[in-house]
Structures are given as C-alpha cells and as structure tokens.
Length: 66
Image (tube, rainbow, N blue to C red; front, top):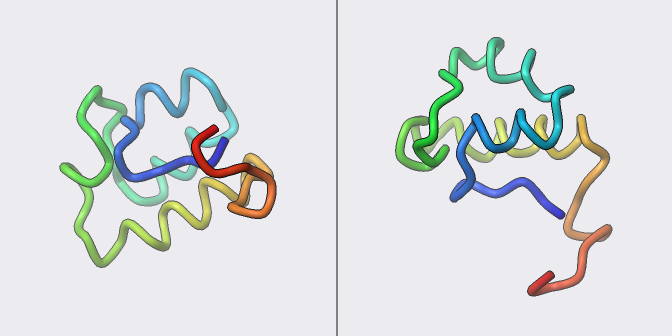
C-alpha cells in the first residue's frame, strides 16, 4: 500500500510507527484530518516521498486499486 494524501497522519502512524519522526520533522500533528487538508500543497509531495521511502512503499510495489 502506498501512503497517499487522503490518509490521516494518525492512521498512517497507527499502521507504520516508523513514520512518526517524519511527521515531527515536517511539524504535522497526528490528527484524523487528511494530509491534504492540513499540510501545505507545496510540501505534500516531499512528505509523501519521505513517508513512502520509510515504509519501503512505492507505486512500483503496489497494484492499482489495491
């Protein structure tokens, strides 16, 4: 599964605890709101890249729709 902007920081950390320090680095609170609603749109791509790198996930590791 690829971490996406429509996921909440809280849900991401619940599944992948290793991502918590990345949210601290980007000053993102662990809320139930989606990343796209609480993080500046200029920052979201970089944040997602770091999160997915931390969990070893990319579009190459996942199939579309699942």
